[in-house]
Length: 77
Image (cartoon, rainbow, N blue to C red):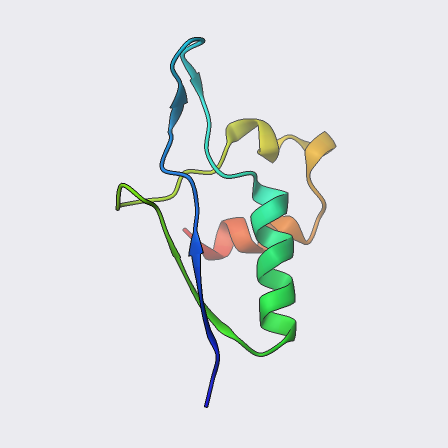
């Protein structure tokens, strides 16, 4: 029997006070998924509002991410 994990990520797409785009932090999600896959679990990612889970654009900057994180970004497209 396989184990299934439900990941509930943010549905917030903008920081209202500053009008800045936001979303889930790529490295946080990617590293968590890596642990899940290492333990041979299945997973589903959802947002409270439904629809697409946005990636925070700041988390895509080279300073904040590692090479392996990008695999999950491109796989989600």
